[in-house]
Length: 553
Image (cartoon, rainbow, N blue to C red; front, top):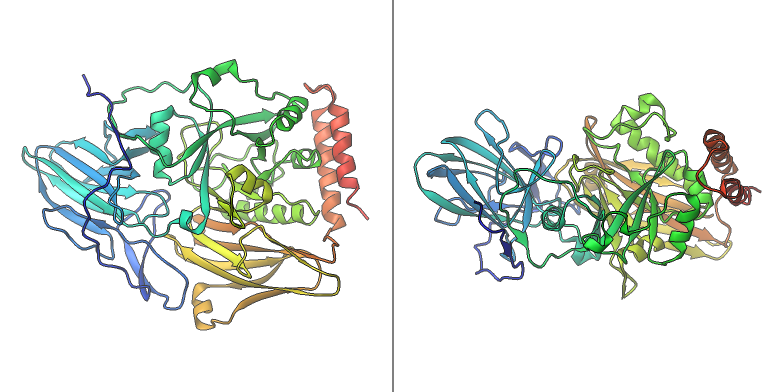
């Protein structure tokens, strides 16, 4: 019989831990992971003048403190009986943290670990994990989320001793200290498992489906945080026709049995969706992809609070784009980089209609087979000096998204989503700045001004010519900043919500972009036909058509 499930108090104070040697900014290591995995291969890149910070990590696998190495890889002394216990802590605070963990044998095959939370092919632990393995040589990979540096190491099992070894991971950046909150969506696990998984992504807020939850087999004892740092809200994947709409309801506890099953009346058609949204001003509706051909309907009904630019269809081994419901060519859908560029282009076409929906990110849709944390949405924790909830920050447009690199852009010291206003006849010059934390090599950064690529540069080019980056506006428009990282086979991006500029109260509207939305709306109405579950179907399409037509000159 397994031991009772243990919960550890994350507020417990540990004795001060030896600090690893610090990494100099003039010579920073770069780790190139393979998809969501991480290898021990590293290289050094000189970037003396960049605002780029890489996390460093240290692991202690002997009785004496061992300083961190640039490669973040350590080989342990020979260990005993086939049993090893890891304790994972933050290097600065000494407090327990959660992480994703993979253990491989000498042939590179992943080993199943009993006392962890499993999600698809991934394993997650909080604070401690006990491994009972056959004698042999092993490697491990530990990833506490992109705000920490991943660790790679090895150990050997030979005799019948029990070893407990502390693992100390160094935080590269604390987004909360910069007033950014990570929001995760699509959690499908029960409370204790979900707490471990979400803690491992460093999310501050998480949306979970209400129960009942999928049954698990073979689950054994695992540690879980007793006082999680994250909060929960109910998240519901609504499918209307070919459209995928993510619903947020902060008024519901997704783990309360009273909200399980059919106890909650979620929307089931367009009419009930509009009524559901109007009943509580904290509720939010997000369209999963800007490439969805239903976008003109939902935007025209003014029901959306955000739109996906990083979607469940991006990244390696992602869900394939369905053949219906999305306006994307098959060849583009099969190429991850082309698909990302198509999403960015379509997002700017939406901006060209004077419809602003903040960009959002989604790792998965209605499945527990893809890991969370692949795509991250960051929302502002404050607007001015006023603390705000993530749903309020989303509605006000203060977001940025990432599939890996954490690139925090500012324009004239203001955060993404800011609206700059000037009287008619004046100009607005935006001074762009950014800071970078990334385990993926940054390939280049692009600046798009009102739909046109106006500047592209690498970090090396910026270091060689450290002139201020400025973009001037004489009329209304927007500035969209995108950082590209990784390579063509594993492309990653960070994208900031557009910095918007209003000159003289005259918005920028491209009639061609508006007509494109009307054409998609007509096509959608024809595909839906006359058979619809919504009794007010014609009224909804007419309302959306009026919305778009009013934007034409």
